[in-house]
Length: 148
Image (tube, rainbow, N blue to C red):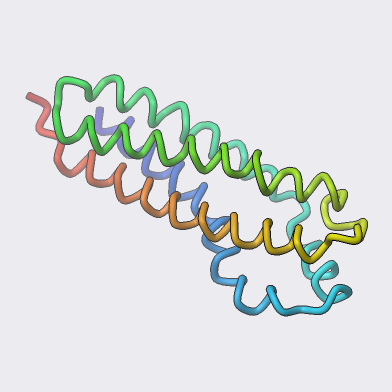
């Protein structure tokens, strides 16, 4: 169980890295002009690989919740962690991925690029908060585990 708890924590922490970076960058990026913004967006090439630990975090947090079901508080924390990771994925595919598609990963400038930028940036900010909450929930699940 301890190995699973540690795995969940590490995977969620890894998944928090990109959304946390986006949150920290937001104040500086949101006011960039079109050319600068599209140039800066190119630093994210290859970040799709962060989907690997994110989907692994989703599945392992579900396993943790299922295995914790007789533990009360650890189960609630593990379940919250799973739900938060799941909702962050739903928000990604509902708002961020469509903006990536509409801009061909920020290489094509559509007329509504500013609306897409706001959608992309603010959804990443929301996801950062959810992933931080998921990480805290996973840690709390491990800390409250008694194994009885």
